[in-house]
Image 1 (spheres, protein in one colour):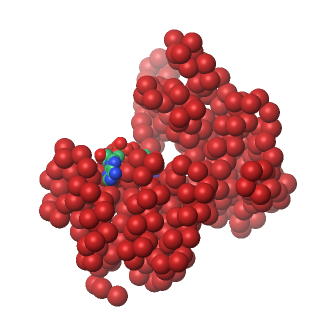
Image 2 (spheres, helix red, strand yellow):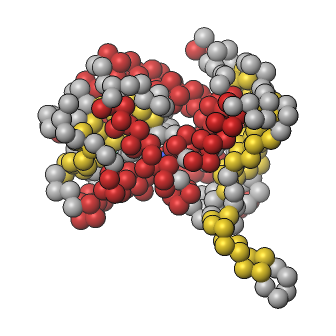
Length: 347
Ligand SMILES: NC(=O)c1ccc[n+]([C@@H]2O[C@H](COP(=O)([O-])OP(=O)(O)OC[C@H]3O[C@@H](n4cnc5c(N)ncnc54)[C@H](O)[C@@H]3O)[C@@H](O)[C@H]2O)c1
């Protein structure tokens, strides 16, 4: 084992630069050795910010460089499959952002390539590394509230949707944009696969788009039933404006665990009009900053210690299936049934 795992970041956009900053801030046992992005502008901005001078404009060239041990794949999702498989074939360990790929077949191909070439594959569900979400899991597993009965997870995002997001047949809408992490969270807490999904949604904030995009929804609610009997509820919304709101709740047989808060900090101002003022959390980038660092460290640790990554390709695939099947349920106005977590067609 080399002194340091030499990592190349592929995709230097919003999420990619969060990982770059983790490595710059010090992921022990690793060094950010190279950057790759076809956008000259993003690549050069990333190089200036990080001081990393080894740059590639084409990810195929990264695979030919024997000095790179691992890649962080943070490109638009449509490229994940090809890049991950090529990295595996080149013997490079892979961290891949969620959503893992475009469909389950691609997920299987990626997992298989990494398995066959004996490289690690870790998926980017950073909530599993967040202090509060982890503590919730620990309290549940210690039996603090008895047995789990109902698990809820919500994500509401502040931003106005980009034009491409209105077409939910090409993109998923909030189920994919904001809720993909919630699906992973409830599955992680329940330790079981989903057997029934019933999703409903509506467009409340972008009525002017309703004629052009009749299936667009900005708010949704998803009922879940797990194979072990636990119930689940996921709610999602886009363009809520008031801040980034991500919380979870585990109702047990003897108590309740509440995870997360809308407050950005613990400072309050109480004014003479008897109003309490607190800051609202602005973004996932603020809320989960430490979680991103922790997941980057976990990836390097599993390479160095030759252990199983804490979030696997199977986790990536299962979350993708839950997003897809929830959208199917929402658009077809009916419950959808799964077996062993898999949709009917792939059984
Ligand atoms: N874990 C999370 O919470 C989280 C948050 C945001 C985004 N993401 C995921 O990260 C991925 C990237 O999203 P983003 O918001 O950073 O997008 P972005 O558009 O900000 O950045 C994508 C970057 O990839 C580059 N790129 C495009 N094609 C490429 C290619 N073929 N090879 C290399 N680079 C290429 C683009 O030039 C751009 O710099 C997506 O899969 C997204 O779903 C995850």
